[in-house]
Amino acid sequence: MTPPTVASVSVLLASLLFILDGYGASSVAPRQPAVMDLSAKSLNPNKRLKEDFVSNLTGSSMLEIAALLLIVPALVLLRQLSSFSSEKGLASTNIFVRKMNDRETSKCKDLRSSTLELAKDFAIVILPVILVFTVLAEWVYFLAIILMVVLLFCISAKRPSFSTFNTEMGPQHLSSSKMSILSYRVFMVVITCICILAVDFKIFPRRYAKTETYGTGLMDLGVGSFVVANSLVSRQARGIMFVNWKVALQSVSPLVLLGAGRLIFTAGVEYQVHVGEYGVHWNFFFTLAAISLLTSIFHIHPKYCGIFGLVILIAYQMSLKYGLSNFLLSSERASDIISQNKEGLFSIFGYWGMYLIGVHLGFSIFFVNGASTKAANKQHTRSSVWILCIIFWLLTVILDRYVERVSRRMCNLSYVTFVLALNLQVLSVLMLSDFVPVQRPLLLEEVFNQNLLVSFLLANVLTGLINLSIDTLSASSIAAVSILVGYMLFLLAAVSFAWFHNVKLKFW
Image 1: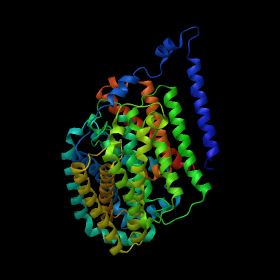
Image 2 (image 1 turned 135 degrees about the vertical axis):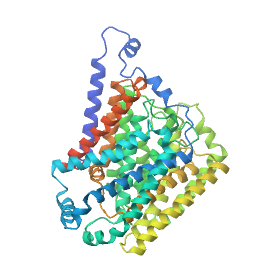
Image 3 (image 1 turned 90 degrees about the vertical axis):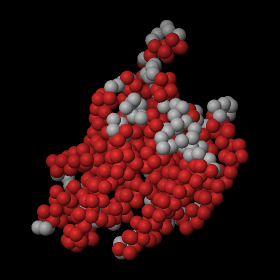
């Protein structure tokens, strides 16, 4: 299937907006005042209540967020271990080896076996994550400790049989570093997809939602984790220095179109938008577009991206310290475009600095030392990630206490180190896959990875439709969990359908 071009995406967005506009126009009752009609025919009558529901929040503790993000990678590795245990008998007769190789070539196109494997992945990984983020939130610490103990015990118990298994498997599979990065990127998107809908239900703890000014919530990690995940495997991190303007515009244009589409859509259907997050008109896609544009304008060798990013972050933090933070956190807004979108515009400096540091880390850890499959280099890569995780955690605690508290709204220096610490923490746990014999991703990871951005966009559309269709604030716990499970099952079915039919949608 031919990937859609920027032009086709533009036509698609224009058509969608035309339909939405037509729907809104057709719903207007004749001979009624406009104000009365809006109140009578509002597509989102609970808009103000839903905005208040996610406003003025202070977040959770850093320790609880760290515990939450131990659970997800632990579940992934336990699923890989359970797959190894159930198929270990086949490996001795080389049936499992042939099965693994067939999956690499034919992508496991048997519908029945694929569905069964995806069902197991969903039951062992996604379903527990939904429960932990909602009805089991009070058990986070206990579950994190239990899962990590079980994971380490399973790895230790199965290690004697690993060497024989890996010898039989041969060089057909992904290196542990590449598989860890793939798992990390996929489940960062999966977690985001769960949270963007779960936050609208009362079973999602308010402490996990985005904070108003200062503090640390689970959802505060969203945009920062997207930036870090993209930077670690970006062209710059892979040593591709120069990109022509045509390629740069092809990368930026879809993000601008998506940002504009989201802006018009949310205004057209009166969808709830928390202005204090990015501003009146700004949104997540515009931030990603700005980072991509700045990176294309300034060609910096990945070896020096870390220094350059650190300089930007220190300069930005000093500006915050000497008055800029008061301007950004103030609820007063002038009529000019900068004041209307002050959070989104000024936080670009923080996200750009974060991106550059991520580029340097990706280049130095994964594409220089991590490029080799030798055991010594694999150990060095794994140790580097663990050490850097500890360093960034220490920096976060120091900066949060003595410089300025973590603030996603401003993307200050402590927020950058907080995001890097947690993302490296997830990677460090996933890199225990060195001790897991199945050196290939879960099928669930493969189907999401083939259309990663599309799955996120589809999740946003589904979230909007669900919010406009039901009153999420009055849903019971059972109803809310059922909706979340059904929503994730539908999302998995959609991306699995695309994977099964080899449909890969790209916007650039």
